[in-house]
Amino acid sequence: MANIKELTKKNEPLSGGHRACAGCAAPVVVRQALLASDKPVVVGSATGCLEVTTTIFPYTAWNVPFIHNAFENSAANVSGVETAYRALKKRGSFDKEVNFIAFGGDGGTYDIGLQSLSGAMERGHRMLYICYDNGAYMNTGIQRSSATPFGANTTTSPAGKKIPGKTQFKKDLTKIIAAHNVPYVAQASVGYWNDFITKVQKALATDGPSFINVLSPCRLGWGFPPEETMEIARQAVACRIWPLYEVINGTWKITFQPKEVTSPLDWMKKQTRFRHVFQPGNESILQKVEEQVEKEWQELLRQCGQA
Amino acid sequence: MSDPGYKELPKGGLILEGGTAAKYETGDWRSQRPVFIQENCINCSFCWIFCPDSSIIINDGKVSGIDYKHCKGCGICAFECPAKKKAIIMKSEAEIEG
Image (cartoon, rainbow over all chains, first blue to last red; front, side, top):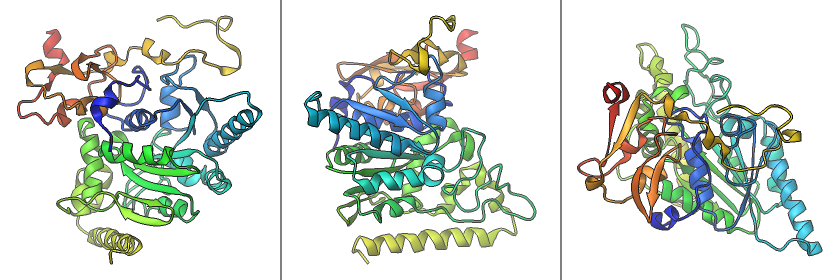
């Protein structure tokens, strides 16, 4: 558990003046994650909204060492830095304790950076990879990614007369990384700051690779008022479309049980990217969503030994 | 803010100092202004932990104001404020400036 009073005493990890949209969740993900570290942090970030909005040359919003890399190699890049660090330490030319964190959006993680992430996880580097999942390529103007949910309208899965938005379900990346048998994997939501910060603390205390997939609502791409960003992030948990859980050395555990379980359709209604699915004739899409959410929840309960 | 020329910039795309984005004032994007009401504040710091623009000013664990140079006016702070009488309310910039 994180103590917010203690956190407020820390140095601000990310300055204002970055160009993320008003109400963007990604800078909040970064602030919460970096506040969780008690050691100096080295950060790398894949190309994406986060990187382009925080590091507009010659300015940077980061108050920690930051490496800008390409779309596909955030994990490879940071794993290399971690290796150099271990080599320097072994030689005795560096003795500080440092944490290594790689950030990537869903495009740079689910799709383009999956190979380098898989490699870094498999090689066992002592690093944390945080995917801020906003469910599409938001930076380039809302193109579908494999993290875009079923039925969502994006510019490359446009909702029209023939095709009702994205026709595929979201890839379950958290489970893919859990299948790498790394010591710490978790799914978090930026709206539950304490749960997320606690997970980052656990991940950084892990002697080995760790991965956290954090839901990061995009007010522009999802279509909701900017002040509701955190509320949308919490409602995704309440409707079980984004359950909060962690996998520690192969043991699955649900870390947060919503008091009141809502319907995923209530969550979807608040977002304009799903507006078309509530029109007459699209009832089968709603049914498919509900069935899929229930199926995945039962599967998660089974993995947690609760079913 | 005047941009440096190529002779002044470090080579290789390096940025030698952290947090320099603060020199760019995103506060002028704002159409809604969060107004802090000290006596309603219960010091939960939720506005601070959820602010995307690091614009809630905290001193000794207590919110003391808002950084209007960088606040984009998203309204998350006012929305998240759990106090019965909100300690942050949103007001239209147009009305304030008259």
